[in-house]
Length: 609
Image (cartoon, rainbow, N blue to C red; front, side, top):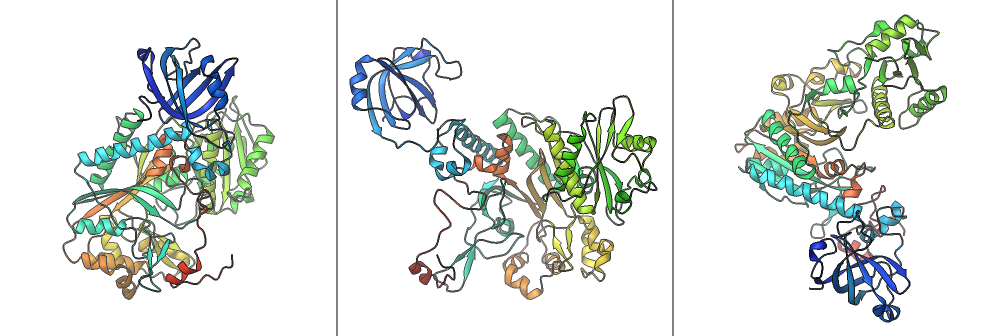
């Protein structure tokens, strides 16, 4: 062995011992005839002291940053202790050293507050991974992995691997495809998830399956997406929705207990999709803070069971509200003292292309109980106070109002709610709030094709009370303008999402397990019988051989790790991620194939390089 100890384990209790360490040179400090070196490995940093006797050897073999060094010496108590290091009470009085390998000058400083930009660090990711902050991220990732496996093993799940080279059965995103050399003109696809395989495993009798597995989707990227990502993929037989929710709520609580020392004594709250959209504007609400939406106006047919407070804005002659499809408001705590400059800045914020709203109205509910508003000329102070009260505002709060098309405005005010919470420091990274979202619509209406599409995926079953509605009614939409009145618009999915701090970290459903119902689902999605057989014949055939009732869930492993680690980006928790353009800048991939490889695959590139 090149070392007797690591750079993170020596303490005062080792004083006087002869030891050998090996690692990378973090820093060098010369003080006259003595030299201090910080030696780093995966486990920590230890200070080395080279005394005057080693000067000649150091002069002949000068050290540099990131040199790989072996040093032998005696553990000694430091005179200038460093309370910020676990090894900060000791140092090694070096008696001999060997340079195991030299290093070029690194392109950025390898420390937590590095001077390297993200693109540069991605190019030299093998150096970036030496930084302590990324080391901690990967250690956390491993801890989450280990805790999940422990819990699932304890509950009798069996890990089974499924293939990566499969048939293309699109599940919403584009497939990555792999040409077959042995079968010219034919292609494999990389799985977007092991969905059909885990259902086949249920048919095969493996009633509790899991897999921590890579999935692949060829979709537009952002900070929280990668073309290849990891799921904790799980499936169970002979279960109902309640069984799945209890089992995997237990798993998340176990992970938090083991990894973060966080105890959840209460069950996770549950909220219907409709309640989430009505009160928060999206189906993954961040419930670490309040600021629920006030619905002042809504279109006919949208959220049919809900009532908007239209009487508070009607009849004032304010065309912006009168002509809008919907009007929504939030009360922002403690911001009534916002200046005109600040409210103008918020108005510009909602006009950005990512948000796309034409303007913003506001009411300042003053601490003395009066109101000032951008709508003073249309609404009396009494009416403004009524709106403020309906929002649950208190004196000192700022009420923000948006108006426009239903879907766009609801999305915009949801984003505005998160933005204001961010500015006020209400989205605390060390606070965790989880909830289940249930009763999603089974279908969404696609205006371009005038047909239904699956909100989750085509293997999700309807809620038991809605199965008959689905079977007895035709999916055909006779009048597109009245699609909300179609029976399929009211069918709920037997599906569920787990939301943590405003992020969907897991989603699943009770699956369809009868061939007739699965064929009806395909039919509703516009997949005709021949296409059903071509794409999913293997699954339909399996359902004829005693498929049990089953359901499951998949957790976004990278996203879960990022939230636990207090980060916005999953890239910080993946050893070798792709950049925002889906490229591996370290490997320079994807890259062109050689002509010989293309010929072997019976492919021809029309792009000139």
